Length: 388
Image (cartoon, rainbow, N blue to C red; front, side):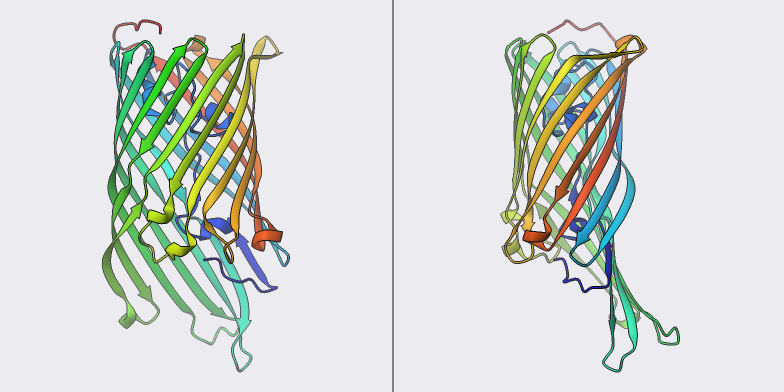
């Protein structure tokens, strides 16, 4: 858990220092602008959409990638520190094999634990020193997906994924008096496993989509190395880390013309989590609720029209801090996009701002700002698909 902070301290990405790190929004920048990657969208270039059933209706071979710039400002009553980072979050290539079957392969980030925190103290005899804790790594997925059009009213998708990652915790103790020996330690956990997922999307009416997705639990085989300044204390052993199963649900409605409304909810119960020596009694259910609206016709600028997207997202993190208080995350989003190559490519841009935790409830908070960029392109490969 997060340590108590004295008056002299610094930190970046405060809540990434806990548990598995910060959960990444990895996927289509348009869906993130509408509230989160769990949103349902009918998009001929939506290769990065999360629900695998949505890929069944891609008309052409499609490739997409997304990344984001993050600015985090951690603060408490005693300190304030800013961190800037860049993350490559997702990639996918999809290949329509028939008019009703699509295969895809990709990359998707899951959790980012990067961050650092430092404290100043002194020994009993008055020697001042600084202890700095560093955290790095991340969990990611390589999904292989088959997506099917069952009828014009329903699509399904099935995914098998290779799950990989590592979490590295490192500390250094440095005395102001450089003649005193520096202390250091490192704990690295290499994780590997397999996962499964299934998605369903229903199209009961031309202007309505309803969908659900389930992700299996993942058992990571974990190799753990611990190294210290005194090599005699070094250890190596294996363990298992279990990431519990998760579900999400979404609805998209086009009430009229170019207007679109989208809502989603996602849940993962971390009472079933195992590993990383994290106290299970401090874990609970991870929750996310989002709402978004889009005006697809948008506004004209220099001969082009740019869609307008707005959203709100609320999340409850799966762990508490410091003594049973929930950690809440609030995000607002704004986005737009542009079509490229005669409609066979697109670039989406999303801005997100919000806050994780609060000083009054949790003793510290992160104020965050994200800029997402997503690019997708397509090309004819086989027969032209029928329109659904």
